[in-house]
Image 1 (tube, rainbow, N blue to C red):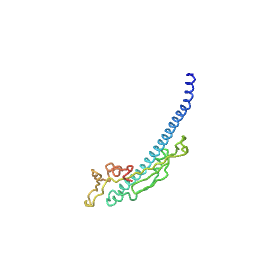
Image 2: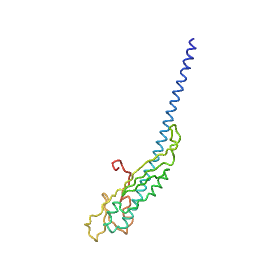
Image 3: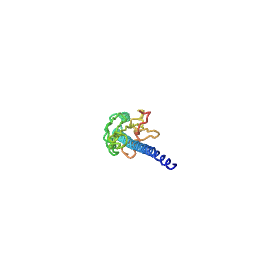
Image 4: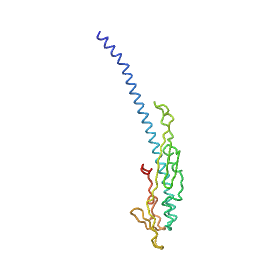
Length: 198
């Protein structure tokens, strides 16, 4: 009699065991789906960051070239440091997004900034979450170009060599000494915008 009861108890426990195992498997697959989505989203964000920075750095280099072209006319420096007349070209954003397995869907250049949105080339993939197999992650980033230098105030002698103050450093500018001139990264800082920068 005792053996029959024990056998009956084990028979009742088996469906509960199956239910628990099935639940655990479902949770495991759900976590896997969340992980897949997080990795895909992270990749898209990396692509957006790289694309925005690349576009801003290209503009920074263009501005530096324009500054060198008017090196002996400090009256024209302020417009350059304010980003006026710079080319607003997104080709570098497209290039860096492609290198990170994504494509640019929006590239919005401002005066000294770029806002870029990208979409990952690969979808999240098959999972237990319906509709994810064709869903592609998107991400946005904003890169800011900030002038690091102050044009002279106009009080210098006309025949004096122009000077440029960048932070704690003052450059004595000699157009014949290319190696001694400040480079693009001395003139401008390029960084991803933080939340307080919009």
